[in-house]
Image 1 (spheres, helix red, strand yellow):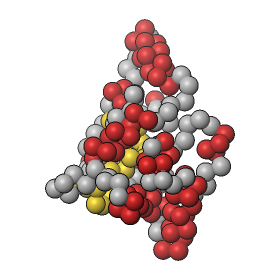
Image 2 (cartoon, rainbow, N blue to C red):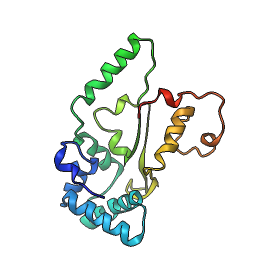
Image 3 (tube, rainbow, N blue to C red):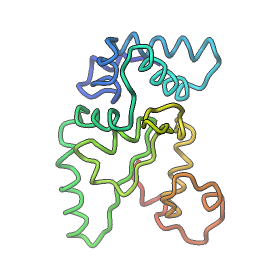
Image 4 (cartoon, one colour):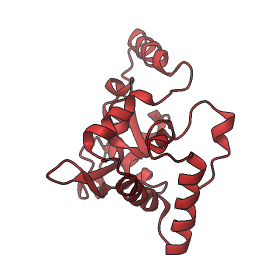
Length: 186
């Protein structure tokens, strides 16, 4: 995992804004440790970072609860023009008799994404998520979306399947697709 793009862009990985600084770490330290851990354990990178979020939160005494992760959504900076884009594209679609739906397919954290300033714009958010215990503390990844599995969610959108845990319908053949791939911008 490399983070040379962090300096070149004001937008960066969502964990870099608040989560990592709250651990008293730099993004380079956090992601560097994950890269080493992932390599030494031969672990898939997304699972490594989800594990490390829980591990480092415990080590640093930062309770990683659902409420805590949701609170981090307000700190995520968006690329210039993103907030206005939704209004513009929705208006353009309406004027031209088109239906536009917005989805997120991300290796980021669902609770953070769903609490950003643009969260209400999305029909569905497919992202990494945690299982929370009885104290609402994250203990285990319940959903991990890596770069390869993102295609599964494009097929779900294609077929109109909003249930992110569905493993049956997504594999069925459909004569017609709700949203053909030719109508998607990804």
